[in-house]
Amino acid sequence: MISAIYLFVFPCISLIAGLAYSYELRKLLARMQHRRGPYLIMPRDLRRGLGVSRFWQPLYDIIKLWHKQTLIQESSIKTWFILSPIIALLLSIVSTWFLVIPGLNSPLSWTPLSAIIVFMILAFVPVFWVVGAASSGSPWALIGARREAELFLAYEIPLISAIISVAILASDLTIRGIVAKQGVPYLLVNPLAGVAFMLAILGKLHLKPFDIPEADVEIVSGPFTEYSGKMLALIEVTKVLLLFQLSGLFVDLFLAGGWPSSNVLGALFFFALAAIVVFLLTLISALMPRYRIDQAVSFYTKLTLVISILSLAWSSIYVILL
Image 1 (cartoon, rainbow, N blue to C red):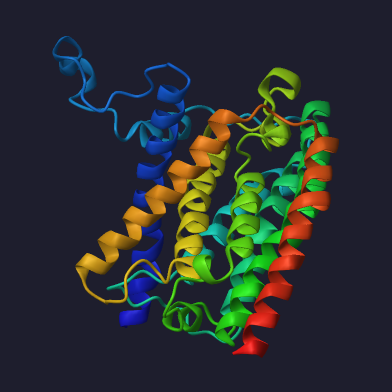
Image 2: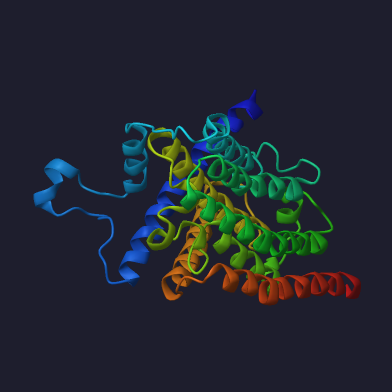
């Protein structure tokens, strides 16, 4: 019964935290670019109609999309066009069950090979985005789908290599085991794995310099060009969940889950560290221009892949010497 409750609680927590981090990303990115971004405290003359804060602006945007009309192209393969964002959302929800948050009983973090399972689940999210785009019948979506597929193949290998690197250090393939065995955060033990994981997150979240699949000025919205209304709202919810899930995974895998305690303070520390990860992602995104797809693939294969391979060697040598 308790596990069933947590199966519902973890996606809700992930959604709320993801919305907060989405606000953080948008606000910090705006300020770094000398824009205002969503108001945290509204001016008095605007509060009557807009409320005292726009902290939940990402949620308002999703609600707005949910109430708009959903249009489906006649030239699309309707079954896959509709199912793809739904399956991607369900996969992102399932992935939240593996996250280790101090003070909360993660439902599946003790599952054997959970570190590999959560990687596989998250890997299929962009796969179904590609399927949805390919079935839309739009040339812009097809271009975005091709870019998404190429970028996916480039960043997934460094991502799994970074996960395996910390698994080698912990001699454990469960996320709970990796968190529990971090006497010293693995970011300090193997910083190369942390760098590879962080760079892979940028590509998975479509943040600059790897926002090529959704380059608005080039291909409208890329894979999501033909999505609207409720379908587009589901995609936005998936992105929100991914932002928190990947930031939280970084805290679990490289920062010992935030705090070596199981109380409320530990949970607060976990969310604070995840917010710092989002800040670093935002900083990189603000500083970097968009790469071309060939530049992005070259970056991942020539630099990030090399870093991830070195991280594997580092972890292996570290374990052998100990």
